[in-house]
Amino acid sequence: MQDTFHQKLSSIVKILKSSPGSVTVQNIQRLSNIHKFETFIETINDKVKRLSIAGKILVMDIDFIELPSKNKDQTRFELNDVRLILANNNNSFKYVNTENGENILKNCLLNYPDLSKFDETLETLSIFDQVSHDDFDLFDYYMKIYDAFHQIPEFDVKMNTNDKFTIIVQDMFEVSLVNDERLNLSRIEYNGEWNDKKQKINDVGLQVKFIGDVSIAITKNILLQNDLIFDDSKKKKLFDSNEVFKSKKNSNLTFQGFQFLESEVLLISEVFSNDLPSLMKVLVELHKFSKLERFIEQLKQNFTLIDKFADLENEDVRLNDFLNGESIDEIEVEHHFITMSLKQQQIELKSDDSEYNFTIDTSIQHKLDEGLEKLKGILEK
Image (cartoon, rainbow, N blue to C red; front, side, top):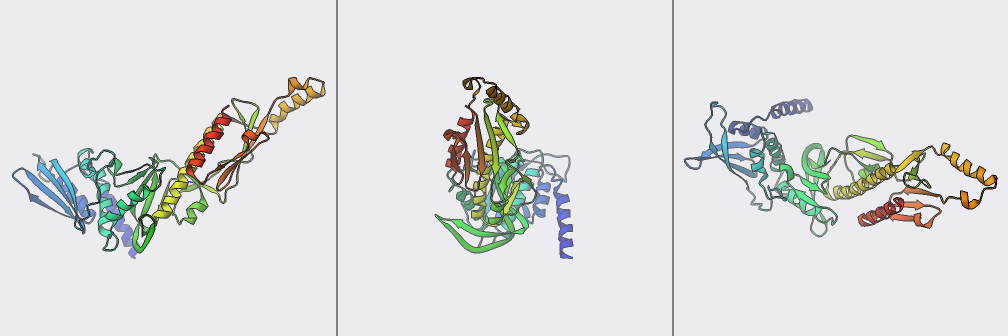
């Protein structure tokens, strides 16, 4: 019965939120109430009024000048300022875009034709406000997530871009705190080393969406070993061992790939996690896999898929010429066959030519980059 009630209530809230309405005082109050905030209005001076949105921890003050309106039930206004104040005096929490320093709360009310963006912002702030407790402050933890990602040297990290309370990593991953009954967020913080505070918040966790509605390949084991939750996925083969490719630039260069990973590869578009260190490990792997996948796709574009049996016809011609007494110098062509084996911590390349015979360490980002660049240079000759 409780589940049914919860589902019905969620449906009602979804319907109410599906039409956030135009930017008016009354619509802001309505949305605030849906997200469990209280609102009240006070007069600051003869021109400026203040709409305050209050929760357990936060107070958002929206200062505005009322505009003339034919509809008395909907008050339009000229925005003066928006401020966020936390009762716990947490001054570290930022509600500005780290790229341009703009106030995202103000932007949500100024730069959009309706309240849909402001509604998203209220929903996130409601999670921070309603589920935080004395031992686990999500306003503070949001900033700690941002700081922790800076510990990965190769990652570029931004916060609150696109007027949303999200953390953007490498312009690829959008990290946010979400309400999800499958999740139980652990308070694990980084202060030179990871420190598990042994505190949890139920029904809240970390979500990562891949920017641009893309899917990224990764081994299933990496996800499972780090206890990540993933919904939609499909199997992916980076290489099919039955496929042989011939270079478009150099017809005497043939290539075949093999996939020897510890588990099947999945294409996923988002993941969920209960703890930050595990999520960060997986993002590092996703970042490497995305580079590898992109490289393989580019590689295949520069090579032509051939029928490895039918294509031997050319070899028969050269053999007949040899048997008919043609000069070996005239018919001999240096041909290179390369195999590329994907393994868990390395890419192994083998060939009869030592130039093509080497191993790429995939466990470290810069070594993967250097190895792929070397291979690219060799194959593009």
